[in-house]
Length: 454
Ligand code: UDX
Image (cartoon, rainbow, N blue to C red; front, side, top):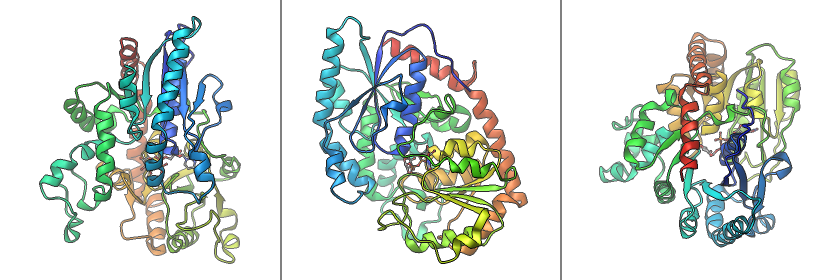
């Protein structure tokens, strides 16, 4: 689906504020491009940590916060994402206030600039709401994860009151009766609850919520969230499908991935990537390597910097490994994932079940092998394997024999074929919902009218 630039200008400027993690940057930048093409002027406010290259977005205006984050992080080892979240929330508030103040002042003093109508912010910024309120600037939240997981987050205090936490180690495989098909072990760890409650509050106090999902996939959860919130919800996804070619990676994509895929048979390749943040131990890394090697299936594997816990961004494969996998395996440090998943040679995706990866896989009709590693990923994986039945999950740790069996099941056995049929049917729904008269298209129109009436 390719959007054509709308000729009529909306005469308003939107401020976009992406959290500096790839899984959050991706949907926010696709949304920025989309709204630009719908006629809005767009300003992106970014932190100095993980910045995008503005040259890749010639139609958008960029502002960088004077937050000191980059300087702080360039002096120490790469921080974990929760530390970044904390630092970001303490360092960015005042620079963000100054930045908004300056943008509004500039817009008010100029006759050739569109007035600023609204801020679209990632609710991981726990101060954006109060800053926007102090300028009377309307704000919409972009929810980058699933609606089903949002419903669970929104119910955590009720679950706590019912005694679900701390999680009972003897009941981890029991069903969560309120949220089928989730199991107790899929619920978010208690250490995350405080952060989640602040992020939820940031969402709840906004004037609307855009989400990267579509009605035909998460109808019940969308309805539930809509019922529980006083503002409109806009499920306009899959957001990346409006502009399949736009370049939203923070890191450089290794294009040899595509040249290598071009040499492979249709649906023969397993694409393996565990997202932009999650890490595994060195022992698990070796099990993954041997699980892939002990299999006939060709594979394209992303080994990104920081994938191995405690490593200094380098990794060592066992001696002789490269010869053993030879032409059957290709390893890159960062792939053009959306392009990879849409390549005819790709037949399966071994993923950590981040929400963007899940949506990208569904949008291309690719069945998944799930290895959730933290946060919302266990819940996403449960929906993939047990609700939509479009993948299977590695649940008993990372062992090479289990990996080899699971890959066979996904790529060549009857179970895998059934998963492929079901995900193909979902892909068709995802394609349709973006077309005129269908769900995401209608929600996008509603979103635009809502912004124009602010
Ligand atoms: C994080 C959390 O892990 C996830 O659970 C949450 O839903 C969002 O934030 P992340 O680990 O980055 O996300 O995973 P995911 O949501 O799948 O996003 C990763 C993005 O990076 C995807 O858009 C994917 O296409 C892109 N990617 C990944 C690449 O472009 N190239 C790669 O090599 C790997």
